[in-house]
Image 1 (cartoon, protein in one colour):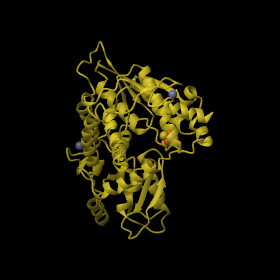
Image 2 (tube, rainbow, N blue to C red):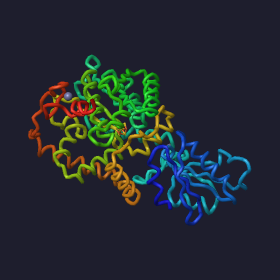
Image 3 (cartoon, rainbow, N blue to C red):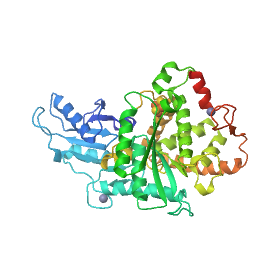
Image 4 (cartoon, rainbow, N blue to C red):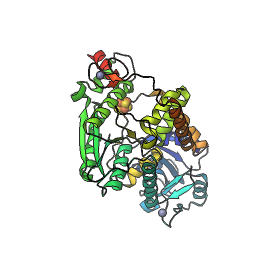
Length: 425
Ligand code: SF4
Ligand SMILES: [Zn+2]
Ligand SMILES: [Zn+2]
């Protein structure tokens, strides 16, 4: 039963509740709100609905990793004492000890005497909230250094403008927060948050609020642009019309890329940063490998993956970077939670990347049985991408030109965005 947990865990907003020590008990999938406490409440309700006393529940959630909710009371009596609700790490040993002894002893942090709030199977680390925070921030800063994102000639007089694609979801909010903490005192870097409103009812409005709240709190410049203002379309209507018979994300991705790169240019950006996490990048890596498109892998290196100093110059495009890509999705969610960041976590109702979904499921299974798989996929892929980029250097084969309609850089007469907009009118 435990072996299936991770499949569910990784989806934000969903917790999997399993009854402890009940052979063959069916895991129950529970939709939950935006806080770890909600998982506890949900488990509590389930406990009280049981016809007989049980020892407790094990709750997995994408917000808190996992939580053990013990109960030794007769159902229907007082709610659980919050002090007895402990976070644990879901490993077999902890669960077994707990179940046999009814002794709620949480594991300690590997680096101090505090109680651990997470366990990373790929490294074996148990970390308390302070050390967990430190470890996430360290990985992001190390990536910034390794990717040479701060050029040697950046000066306070000539600061670098870093535009962050800020969607209001956990990834971009965490990235913005860590970049702010890293560079708030550094006059060589100026941060700007750029939010795109796709026109999706009940989804984007709240996450735009999260972006505004975060930017206000940090005191960074924030720009909001919408498909409606820029292109005269809303994604809700695009999905309805669907003139090209494509998935929603196929339209949306083209529009988003266009806006991000145009605004990055308009804002005079030196770098465009996005909050892709380890899961996202390992999925993309695996998809590119499975599609067998080596040229695409080479392009990936020059567009966003390679250290800035090692990429082939791409004068037409603002370079991209993904400094959060060493941090697994679940840890990004946990970081947002422990820092109480205003991340908005709901799934887009039009989410439709079917192939990515398959790869995601495949990776959950692999990671569960072979912890560290995502890391090894990405590091091997980065090395291969560098070799591919060298192989294709100066040989991009594509004649870049200006789109006849909008002037953006494209390989055809009319860019993909303009042809999609044409079909939508
Ligand atoms: S899930 Fe797809 S349709 Fe929804 S915002 Fe993302 S790219 Fe657009
Ligand atoms: Zn600690
Ligand atoms: Zn165009």
